Image (cartoon, rainbow, N blue to C red; front, top):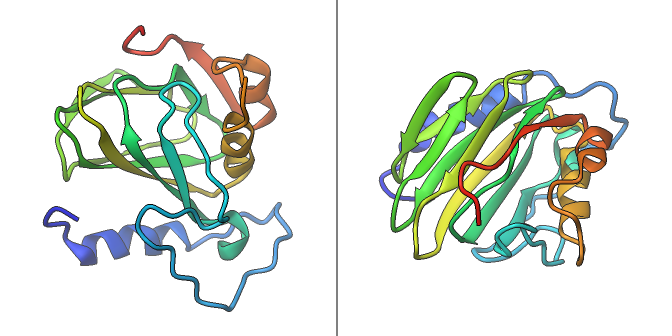
Length: 184
């Protein structure tokens, strides 16, 4: 993980699990599950609609009683999602690797992430990001509480999904508020 300070990462995930999302009535699993590199916890492939890259679900919403959902975007291609806001959760980004940087805007703050950098986008604050690389990159995303975000990515992975469907965003506790940073 590119010289990642393991203790810092564990502190972040521990903070995510402090207050489980009470509205969800999922049972927490007591079984330990290994999710191998390049694999998805569900055993089903997921794709990012815009970039056609892999989204691997690593920690599922029910496994933490709704406290956190974690996924990896591997083989990430140039570009990113439209500007949006989450009303139900914070979103944490960790840029693992890539041939170039990730541009990001969280509210009025403009950032340029290099591999190993991370940032938290608080709920109710518009944000947008774009991977600049011409070679595939990799990022981790964590959402807390998980709320309806896992089902958002399930829907987005279906063939012929309209990427910027405002209704889909709204059904999952988000709102589109602007275009992507990079136009395709």
